[in-house]
Image (cartoon, one colour):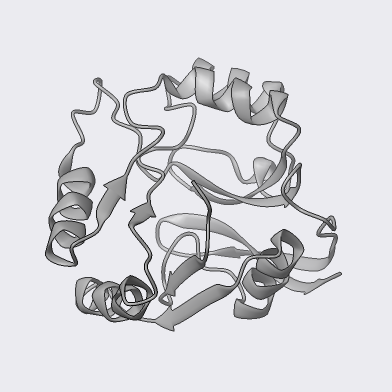
Length: 193
């Protein structure tokens, strides 16, 4: 399977919102074109379809999603949504992580040589001190001690991949600040290289 494009639907207030230039920098480091589109919760499905339709005409056969089904949370709605929308577009929804154990995914991610920074944490679940730190075994132990999902499947935390086997250049955060919203502590990245 060849990845032809990356897609980033962005909306303010999202817990994993990052600067559009940073997303482009990351995509360029992978050597894969990035499609970005501003959206909102209300318009997300429409905007998703609008972004994907031109790719279907270029022979794209599917969209890869990163959903993980976790039995303890009984969360399946997003997978059903992805399959329904992709079926409507006459392409396949690909869910390579579906059904895998979150702890195994976490360990596999690190073992594969990826580095990621924690850029967002739910402020009622995870201490602000973790913001900006590297995803590692210490963080996994912390999550386990609080009985939280290892991969943050319910939005407990979000990360930014800064290096790894698919990136030709490491992303270095040069300037950032902590921002607190109603539900999250977020790392606002002001300068990177």
